[in-house]
Amino acid sequence: MKSERMRNIIAQGWLSILLILITMAIVSVLQDVLDGNLQGALNARGGHKELWYTTILFIVAAVMPFLIKIFEAKTFKWTVFVITLLWTLSFIVSWVRGRVTAQGHYYHLLFLAHSIVSIWTTIVACNWARLKNNSIVKE
Image 1 (cartoon, one colour):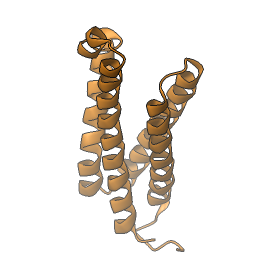
Image 2: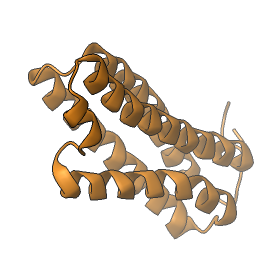
Image 3: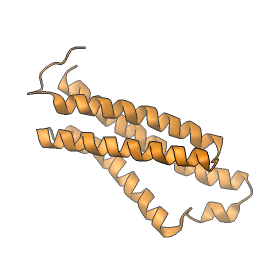
């Protein structure tokens, strides 16, 4: 696979992650509304700390595709891989914790989709970082 194709896959992976995050935020509010918990829908779950954390996640997911398309230094490629790996692992841990606390079915489907996209993006990011001089790897 060529370097440019890998970059496109990684950037698309991060855009998909962003869309899933947005969907998770919307579903969270809608779930409260449908459960008749209008106060919960208007308040940020976890308070200001959770809202701050969510804002940072949105910013990282929104900025990563641009950075991936702009920079191609070896150190940057490994940084992308590490950030993607840590992101993936943190969401999988969060999903496992959510299963224990029995969050709604919608969240499980979204976390599953997020995990699939994140794992694939992590694998491609690792292969991209391992490329030497943008050479072609076996397809």
